[in-house]
Image (cartoon, rainbow, N blue to C red; front, side):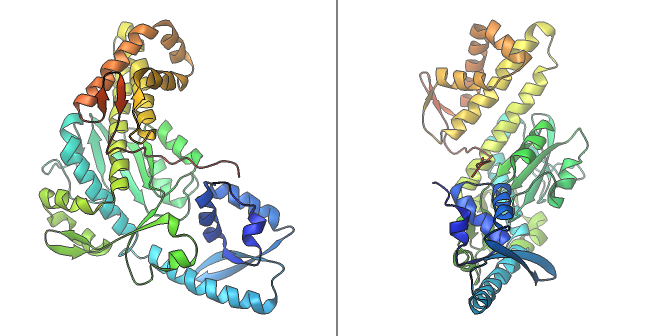
Length: 388
């Protein structure tokens, strides 16, 4: 969908800046791009103001052409809606802890289905094992012998390397691999976390508990960035974010797996895809320790497997021929490994086919002849436009 000129969107209107940035996401535009456009318009078409809500200053912009009376009326209406909006997204009953609970249930489901295939465990901070799953919300998980630290951030604004919410995750011990599960992140943040052997899941939507003020999202024109979910039912009782966190250590794994049916299908698919990509990444790093003669081939095919699987995830269930998977994956290889791929293409291609067949055996993809596809798995990252 083509983004309209921002000056046309703002004409005759008042917007809180963060609301406007979320609105422009509907057209696939990153927040920083909208921010630069706003800065340019401040010199000619719009004015900037500030409102304090719950002790925090929030900026808003408005069309210079508005009369004082119209501006006052519009600002009063927007402030009332925006205050209710901020109240929801900062309340752990509805937002932060609730989103963590949804992701936790999704991981429990993934563990029950696929954990045995990839040596997956969910750990408590004390590293104690309980039936393979630690009953904790934000937690480390082990996959194929490596430990990944998961952080769930239900932030409204896009996260970047400068965001306070991710500083702890970005300063982990090098032996721990960071995983960020958030609504939307910048290209730079995704790249930085992947360079640290981690991964980002962009859910694209806030995960919120349905409540009496849920309508404010549609009133503000940003209902495309939220999914509302009813109170969670686990073991016969209902929970919001806070009560779930208080009781989570008392739940049985079978009850958590049963409760995972309340996780939106698209969220579960992204978590499933994340688990497989983390597993494939560990295989690439393990290939580095092989003897020299086999090392290059294994590293190439392991890296190709990551790109080929991402390609299949991006196809959203549509079948893809193996040759197309190989072509796409090789196009992503640069540097020294690309020369190895060129020299040993036949044997590397054969090794990649073996790896994809291994994924089929583990139920991570489907195969018919030379055609592959995935179902119940989704691409974790969401890539928006870097230009308007």
